[in-house]
Length: 463
Picture 1: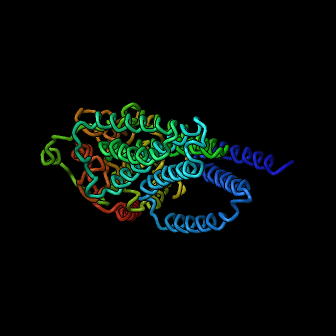
Picture 2: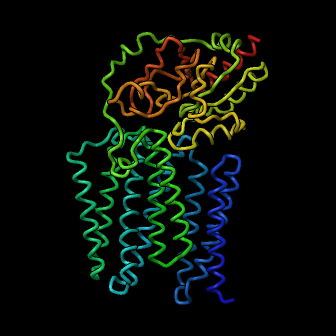
Picture 3: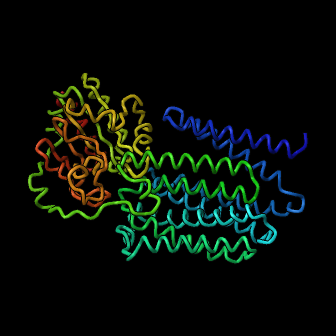
């Protein structure tokens, strides 16, 4: 068996590892193993790509080694230093750099071969890689800025005639791409520049509350760009891996759209999100009632069923372990404890699942929104820890709200709602929450972790 056959065989093994890795990552219990399988598959693919380098290109090994060292160091340092709360921003950047890599690889192959030396289908793949990769890069940077809440990007930058401009930029990029087929390789640069502008235009108008959907879509784009680049350089494993990422990203985007009651069409064309809220904040919060850990402990003492609703504030406060300890204390008293998980709680899909799994919360206690919502009228106490938009009843009542139509967790139907929050500040969508002033709601103003620790002490003292 020659080297070429061995390389192709190992590529097949890598592809199989990718597929099984994705399958295992579909459940929290097996996600770590799935991630490891994917990493092993990618390592094999990289090694085989190096084996494929011809003798004439052996001098490039030094450059490749330098790139591997730099990339590994930067990636390792970032992964170690980035907090769990900033993971959505981190993912957005990874998506963007994946798209940028596709732009450079396809452009490098075009510069090496020349447009006249490439087949028509390869030139089409080159244009696709440049357009999708550039859109992914600039769109991901805007998503990062919104998630990081950078001042200039907290609200969409107003651009008149946004949709006609999007259509014109996309059309011009496609028309210029056709010039590649005529042997004009230089048009690749303006095509990429137009695609960079398009990525900004598509993500800019989308509100912060819809960023989880955008991240899923950009992840899909990065995979599609990688698959197109695989056709450019004739690398089978890149085609397979890119296709898997692209397909899974589209599926996840569809699931997120369903969870937030958004149109997949609108996600593609950057027209998501509602208008601003005209509600009077002072009027909404006129009847807010605050509570203390001692009072909450008394309420919990007679509760038979308690549901925790985690949100981004829990992640910021790193309160997941304290919540788990409180739950253990309540269970010792015979109380049933569950966790209601909204699909987009936090700032990316699965954010809360990961945090709770880190605290060894049993998987069978984590209930998806659709499963637990019909039973909230039998919940004695719902404890909301840092969540806001995903429990905001405005989604049902205000068609002009940025979260209008988004399915929420029905905590307002519980007998008593305890909301742990530092203040009455709005969530990521930037709108007030009438739940804070509801008749069955008590506000427990404190840092998430400190609040739970004080509550644990109060529960122990009470009982």
